[in-house]
Amino acid sequence: MERTCFKCLDEIKGCFADEDNISNPPLNATYWTTYGNYGSSVWDSNDYYLEIYICDECLRTSKATVYKVRQEIPKLVVETWNKDEKH
Ligand SMILES: [Zn+2]
Image (cartoon, rainbow, N blue to C red; front, side, top):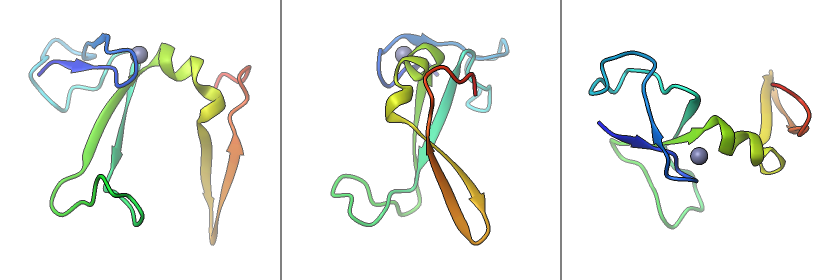
């Protein structure tokens, strides 16, 4: 299966040789999933979720529009992602 970056459309290879295996993690990229959410008029999941790939370079250059979130039960902590921060 050919995978491309959601933003720049560059091809994304897998970490391992088996390119047809969907479980092959993307190399120099991340994958993102959504089941949809209340309020979307585009996607409302039933049995499927959506998955996209974003190459590391596009993620790096778009940090200002990405939120870092971690769960601190019972709340979520949401921070901006500092452009100079590695992770
Ligand atoms: Zn990209």
